[in-house]
Image (cartoon, rainbow, N blue to C red; front, top):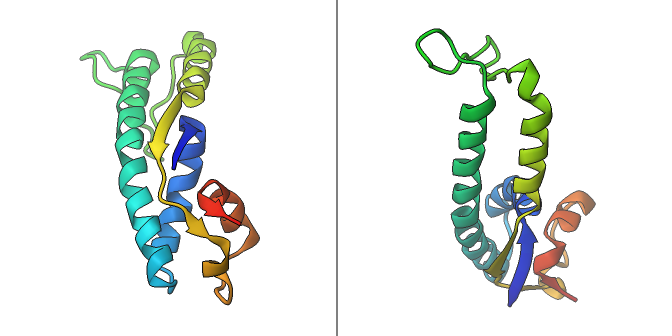
Length: 128
């Protein structure tokens, strides 16, 4: 089923899908999750490339033009560009993608230990 998912939803979903792909679930559910991870990763790769461009554009650089990385592995933003970065990243997160999602039947999840937060994260791929 073709669904429209924002980049924000994709970013917030991929980690849960990864965790669920390692859980002991019915074969049909595990297969659907694997297929959806593969499809979502295509969009996530495009998102990550554009985010990297924004970090390169707005990140602090040393005298040689290389991005600075602090002790936590984070690239600080130039103070005067924080607002611009926030505006652009918000726009990037709001971009919608049409993805052919492999659906899961709610009945296939009965008797399996999936948390409410995991269910909320993947609700777009569940048919009741």
